[in-house]
Length: 216
Ligand code: PRT
Ligand code: MG
Image (cartoon, rainbow, N blue to C red; front, side, top):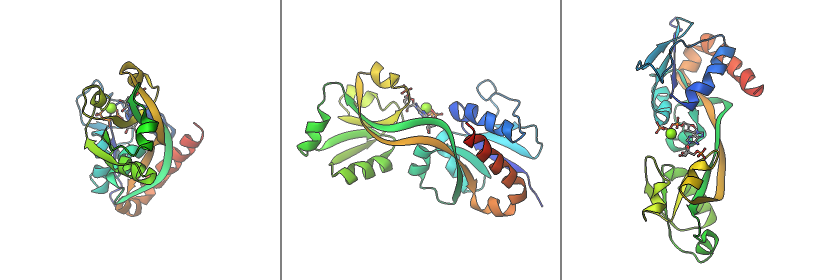
């Protein structure tokens, strides 16, 4: 039986913070994706390779079985929907929160109280739609793919929904966090079919990740 595995990771914080978990499972990756242009990285286990994809594409690769497993943020998984994915472990890495932010001086509370229709720029339209619907706030959602912080500065939107970790990006752009929607961390995602056909090879890795994540 073919028990070789492909792991989908994005470069940057997810790659960096997954390395120690891989090491806990006895797997090391020789290449640094920041330096190498390779998209397929071998590991110390000849049966395991890492593919480097965009953070928001990780669930898609795993869903279609192009990767057997991967690591993706809760933000990305909520937008993707999670079809075909088994999500066994919250890895507790790449932590941040998803928040509503507005320009300093914009009275968000009064705007909401008065039932104003807010223009909200975000990459996270599904989460944002649910959040504002649950609060009964009327919003026009404007889909962006990045640099949400610019939206209110150039009059594209009244508010943004974005990820915040240190808060320095908001501060640098004179925005203030007015609502925290949810805490975000990254999860291990596994292709549902691979979980059955490659269980022997996958299970020990899932368990090692679980133990390592718990002891963080
Ligand atoms: O950057 P790229 O467009 O290639 O893709 P990406 O932004 O989806 O990937 P990446 O690697 O930046 O993020 C991968 C995952 O890391 C996300 O899906 C989140 O789950 C998680 N994560 C954790 C974060 C942050 N912290 C974070 N701070 N993702 C993005 N940010 C950004 C945020 O969008 C904002 O622009 O950092 C900025 C805010 O940071 P502070 O520290 O200034 O508050
Ligand atoms: Mg980014």
